[in-house]
Image (cartoon, rainbow, N blue to C red; front, side, top):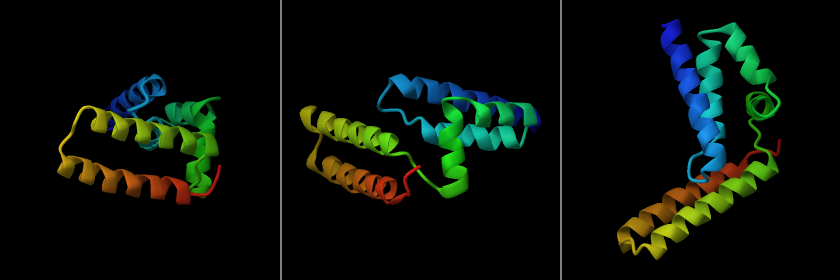
Length: 117
């Protein structure tokens, strides 16, 4: 199981790195998953990701306070608006736009009601 968790953790880190440059792919949820998998597989990998200059502060903010940094909240909002705008531009059916609007609004509500990191 340790090898499976370590592999899943590395896969999540790869997705998080891709998410840095692709605005439609979330970064922080994958980092949180990676930290979870590493905590259950390798103390060395877990320490690496928590102590990382870029990834560590986001993980620690969430772990200790359930907090999201304001810059991350703004980036998420812009990404969500871009996804919805793209759906409108591509002519998605009204019921799809309605579902997206509800789900994305709930996600935004969750993000903006978290404490600031």
